Length: 175
Image (cartoon, rainbow, N blue to C red; front, side, top):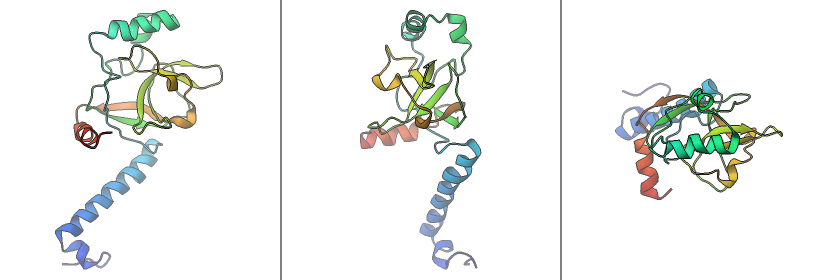
């Protein structure tokens, strides 16, 4: 039974239904969610351990921030996403006009294929941001000056473990 709007091969075949499903998902993701969350990247999957809270957190996170930025534990513990992110988690991202120290943001860096998910640890005098992964021993070169134009948004919600499919695909194709 064909549709008056869509051609018969799209509505009466299994591959037509797949095409319609994929197009619907793309439209939902790139149009509806992008508009709703004010970002072109409303959903990402965590594919690295840079934000995991492991037993070394005391050194990689708390001591590093105290030694390098003179932050105390109470201040650090007041930040959002205080339990970190595990590989396979799927954060929901919302674009903002500005961001605060402690926000976990998603941003792009030239030459790196996957978006970076790290915490803002300092706002520079020029308005750029410094970031660091909670589980990283130090900052990477690209984390010392992240411009607003690089930022897709901040994490507002986390769906645990549902991103493992993307992790599997990325590892399969070597990204």
